[in-house]
Image 1 (cartoon, one colour):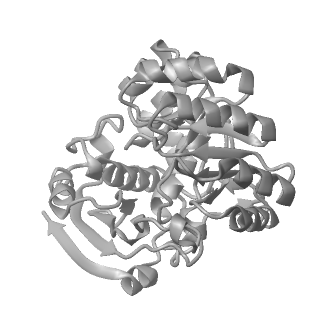
Image 2 (tube, helix red, strand yellow):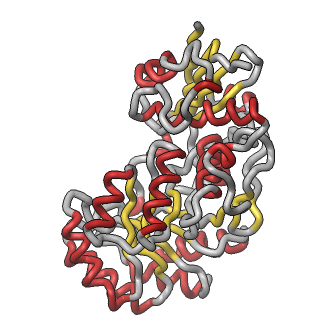
Image 3 (cartoon, helix red, strand yellow):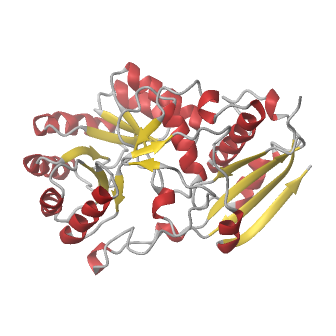
Length: 363
């Protein structure tokens, strides 16, 4: 049996979030709308009639996607080492890796999680999510998340935001909601981040402090971690490679890690490394369009140390779900699909509604 790629379709689509789901309406909380950057969705067609679907990161150049897709044309997917695909490294790798795993899983009657080593869990805990908002707006949004069944929430912030007021407002609205605070490296000085960590520690509802300062000096993270010990708040780094995680572990920089490499295989390896170091992890996201979210669920389900809530909410907050059947949530848990491959399928009607352009490659 062979599973040769005969054709690759790709679709550039709008993928905006629903109004009110990114940032607050007040001028001080408005930012560049990253959700207006288009995304590519990918469909591999094989000679056996089996397809595989993938999703690229925002802003990927068409030339990079075409280069990666050409490397798969005519290739028998069943003959590949799935750990190292013959696709150039870069932004197209994750989209094509997901599509390959989807097709191979369907051909073998296996789920993607089985191809990643097997499931250690059937559900993946997920946190509610928010961009920057006013304290009152954030409190309302936290209550909305709890009403939907979510236990915790991840929020964005930057230096100058009234973060203590934010956390007090959330605690009043949902007293038992733990919050991950993520400034996206926008606290430029370690001292400012340490001061905020101590202030937040007095409120008592901050679960994790992620990426508070730039990641160009892991020594500064090690010093910040020492300065934060008496707050009771774990320090996290958002890391995208095995090498960066090794540096962070060796440097004593982190209590927990947000692992978000451009590969499911690399995520499982990063989670293994973190687990060996006694560091729990979660899977970050870019508030994606559904196909990538499915890949995250499978990767998390295969990783024993992935015990912290991941932020996998793309198909909840987007205008379009892009999947025929959205990921099933029960409370805070995304359920691992039961079907072969990813266990989900692109809604081509939604793709057409949001379509900007399309392309196709053939053998």
